[in-house]
Length: 220
Image (tube, rainbow, N blue to C red; front, side):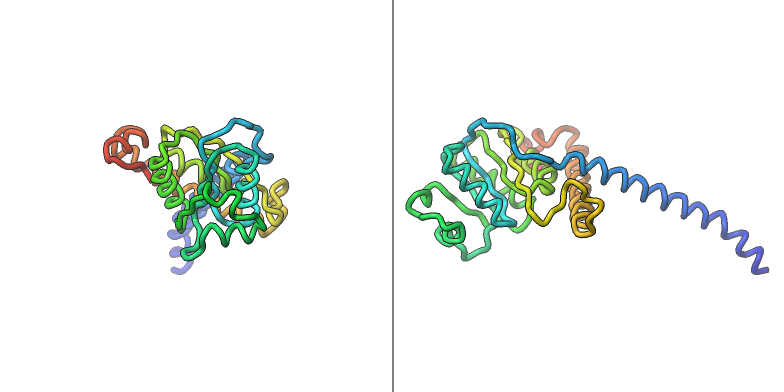
């Protein structure tokens, strides 16, 4: 009887194994494809923009943004994702930069995730009347950041400016457990964000830009 029971269950077991392997293989293939979207070198564009937008997450991003501001790549800088209670003067002190040189050209926001980064940047850009920005964030974070920013601001020109954290071994990411876990986590977040935007587009029957016009806001 037990042999018959196992025999009856085995087709279902094989089916589960087959589809599990199929899903895992598809996910792995997607991860590899995602890794090719992650910038492998710094920005080659020298085009100036109205603003520089820095997404917090490491002093390297802030330093890169400040260097761009001092080099005249934009007139204003917006730092999104700053802890509440931290002001521009404190941030500049971390970077050992005299506040009187650039303090009046820097604004900050308190977003807690990439979705809010895009939303608060959109509001700030609208208030300033700006039409272009240079986006500064870590290279591994750039694909998802561009997805959120381009959806929130379809009419804004965005120049990606990736930063490369030293602890992220990007060239051979699969050989480094920490970097592989980071890439896998970022890929999963990217998938969720992509699906969320696709559902909104399908609900509207158009593009994220159309949703922005229809609702008075942007797809997030």
